[in-house]
Length: 403
Ligand SMILES: Cc1cc2nc3c(=O)[nH]c(=O)nc-3n(C[C@H](O)[C@H](O)[C@H](O)COP(=O)(O)OP(=O)(O)OC[C@H]3O[C@@H](n4cnc5c(N)ncnc54)[C@H](O)[C@@H]3O)c2cc1C
Image (cartoon, rainbow, N blue to C red; front, side, top):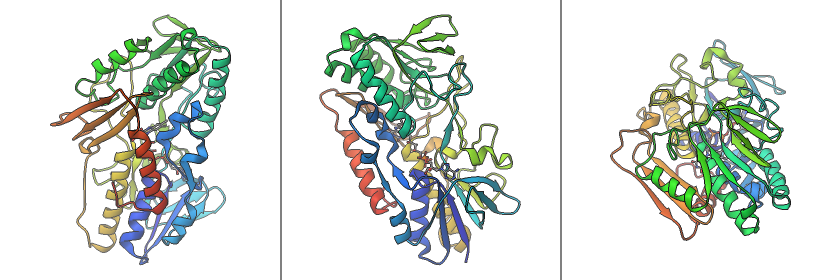
């Protein structure tokens, strides 16, 4: 009997675990190690800072379902992976020996690269974790009571600009609803060379569409923006421009999660796992990775202001399934090995833009693409709401085989 250990229990980790449980039918042992007992539907964190969702509405305890599917759940943090001995160290459950390991530990937020952000968002807000999104809601309420300028954006080196755009347009809409919009100047700052690059070299018509949205909603934007320093009430750009703010939300760069950074033999200098297109480690054949943990090199040349590639939910799910298939192949030889380069995975995303939304579809995440379209719906936004319901139902039932 082989022992497969999966680190992480959200998008990529739970998909790999449920698919392995379904395919291996109890013939091999599966253990999930995760510091969070909850599945969290991360894309809906953009609504928490406006009180439209509470974290409890978009998360649920996944342990019971894991156990029902024959998966052992270890509620703990992995601290280090030792590829020589096939052992993963944990904070309070000792050493766990594995035959195969799947790394689906997501990312850590790298605030330290920018002066003034080192104190983990003391001055500015972020929406990349439940706690931070809840704090952002408290700050939003203060802004409504005492309006003033707002700066929203992504720092140089960031890769999750999409969530920043969603926060921006939702903020604009909520301020209008609260009847204080006229008292709030909003500035969007982004390392992208043009609006809607998104770290994937843009989508046909996207730049124009976002420029129209910005003009329509009276939002000033600065592309190629690089932050020199964040102070208590202003952001200073490398260009020397100073942007005062009462509220600021900035998406920071990502690094690999702590246990990966602590295992330098298996990762690059940013803590991401170099993999083949089978999502098997380039050097250690019994190590696999999926989701945000995977190293993805940008397909475009380095820009004046650096930024990265967004690793979204759909590819994390696809990678989780590929990993499960390939571990089945390695153990039993039953299935054919699968491979799909990150850039060849289709792009499927809904950008909520306040009372409007944009459906983004591409046949490949990276160019060249044969098909790419952005479909705006400026009358209402319900696509993201429906996707949230679907994803929560799917994951509450462990139906990982569904897209
Ligand atoms: C605000 C925001 C909005 C987004 N919106 C969208 C969107 O609209 N559409 C979209 O497709 N994508 C979106 N994304 C991206 C999407 O959320 C990610 O692609 C997805 O969460 C990646 O899944 P993952 O399993 O790799 O990582 P995560 O979902 O981050 O899961 C990481 C897992 O690792 C576990 N872990 C952490 N440390 C350890 C440790 N030491 N040991 C063991 N386990 C550990 C965690 O508990 C967690 O279970 C958004 C992201 C953010 C931040």
